[in-house]
Image (cartoon, rainbow, N blue to C red; front, side, top):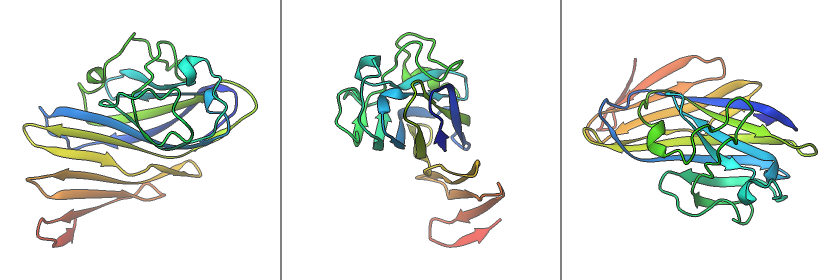
Length: 212
């Protein structure tokens, strides 16, 4: 997904979650980013939950100054349990980090509006569309969202991990593989192809499979 240069309104990529049971208690939310960009200090990146809550993940780095001229995010995990600041991490920032959570940062019209917002504010509604917003605020360097992954780990009443595949973008059409896994139930795999047709494959615990 191209991130256009000097376009504060930004671009958005959406992952649709379904199947997480009511009453599930979330223990971790993480976003994995793979972005090509030649001046990462230009970028403001936010996660917007189905309930509308908005958290700034990346706020121009270096404390929001926009002065970081290094390249790329490679397998950069921003996690609700991360404690290491993203600002100051060496390029390409591979590892697990805390969100910047900077008030007023994010795509124009979709910035974080709650000071010191907590991850729990994003998880009151789990199923639905989760959006990643990316904006470039300064001229001279464009970039590309190569892929991103959203992972939600939960327990009680049914433990499991919901993780999207890396969401790839081809000519504005999303291609993805979405999985829901549970210790006590079959795994449902939904494959959305480039023409947005869904095929569902039900895999039994014993390894047998059938197409529905």
